[in-house]
Length: 139
Image 1 (cartoon, helix red, strand yellow):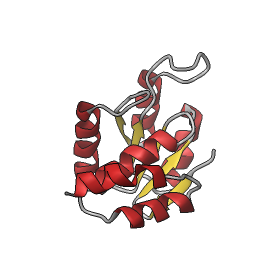
Image 2 (tube, rainbow, N blue to C red):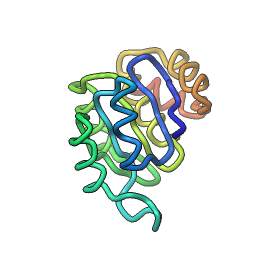
Image 3 (cartoon, rainbow, N blue to C red):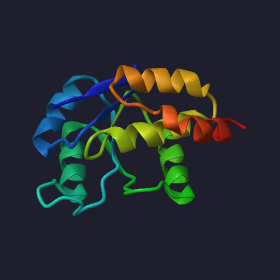
Image 4 (cartoon, rainbow, N blue to C red):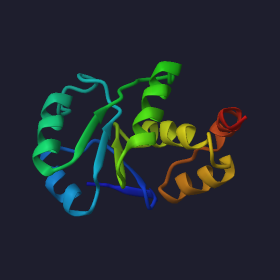
């Protein structure tokens, strides 16, 4: 597992497996968000299996999948999850980049973009090109 702590309340990770979820729960995470569409890769664990394993581990599971551009509907769904999620939250996708990007756009509603870019960089994600989009969300 390659969990990258972005803030005390949010971490991102590349693809995780159902067998990882007890350790994730033991690490204190409360909410798990999957940003991968089912079938994106032939070897990925499907969202139904992940949801069942998350429940068994005591985690709340949310599926907010997307590939490519983030639609307004997808961003709104992610915003709603983040607004009500019990933290800390772990979100995952293929590399963690999508999850970190959608998180930063969500947080940009109330947090300066430079702080979000810095936090993401601490986890190994370069979100500097997203600054104009983050600033537009803060508007």
